[in-house]
Image 1 (spheres, one colour):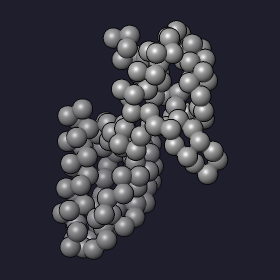
Image 2 (image 1 turned 180 degrees about the horizontal axis):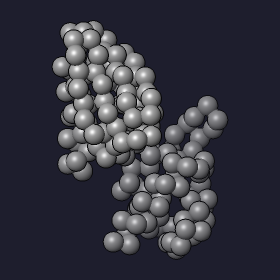
Image 3 (image 1 turned 30 degrees about the horizontal axis):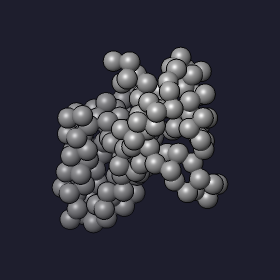
Image 4 (image 1 turned 60 degrees about the horizontal axis):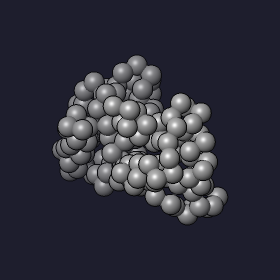
Length: 151
């Protein structure tokens, strides 16, 4: 259990901070109550899927794109209450105050069937690339939900 908690803390630190060295990560981890050796930290980073990524602001450690997508899809399933559609649009109902966060997750998943999302407080309007893509759009979102619940 401690390893799982440490992995969770590492993911959170990497997601919320610019970390450029393992020493910085170890220090941040220590501040959250986890003391670890460099070898353990290196092994943890490999298991989690943390990659050295070059960004416009410089190189840093980040969750690999696959890990980030997995993290996002695990969140989406907890936020959506139901999905409905008509001939032209898809509506996603979320928990109160969560529509904007879920819309951002849907946008980041870059579904080919989705042209745009517009979010209110608990409702997301999804505009498909084509009215012929309504069922594909619903399928993409439901597949993300199924994946989230399976994790």
